[in-house]
Image 1 (spheres, rainbow, N blue to C red):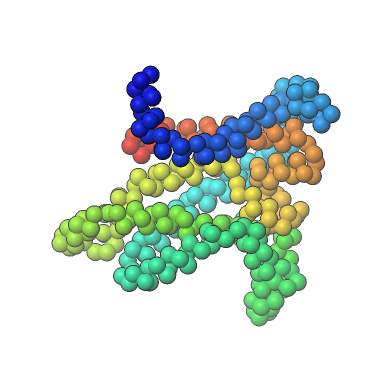
Image 2: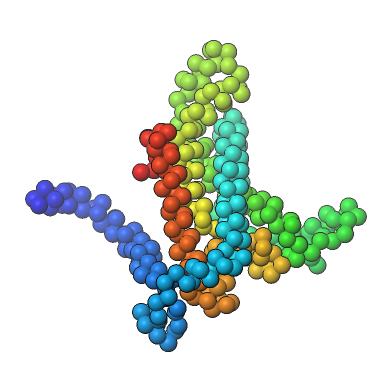
Length: 305
């Protein structure tokens, strides 16, 4: 006990700094967990959460009997897998290319240009997308397609284009953050390794494959694991705001997050929406634990925990 008091007295400024973050985390992440029980109740506003009758797994049963469960699971997983793979590959490639630039001001300029989209709100991105894709006044229809003599496309009612559009927008917006992390790791690589490789007659490509990429191994694993932790969570703004909540696009844009929102705001099916949220959390947790366990067996030092 005396040792504990002594430790607290010695590190009290650090504990004080920890308090706001803990309070924020507790209010936003732990208190709402009491609402998990709604997924197992036939909720009605008159009786409230605790007064609503218990229905067991009926909400989950109804959820998985519909096509919505398959569509939202497929879309959430496949989109996130593409985002993770392409996002990391392109971020590494851009970070390596940025490292090859010699001028300091040029590096700072390119870093800023690539990072700016990450700082833009998804609401603004949705307006930018609408300016390009509007069927009546959009840049693509009025300038590019018209100039090429091609017919106009009703983008917000044509689902086949949107998987590519959403992937492009996500990469454009998020690439800067990952790139900065990889670039910071590259800057920390011991330069004598490159000098030794140059003495041995290594080409620039050989330096990248034998020095840079192996040095990025731990960073790649950590970032991929952190991305996998959100593989069952989608960017609500991307799939709801950018698509303008268009009905014809639901089959290619419906994810678990948008399903939960639509269930609450449009169909008022609170129990099934809660069941979808619990399903998202449980499966996401299992995937994270499994991925971390695999990494721990391969390289214990690279595991998150």
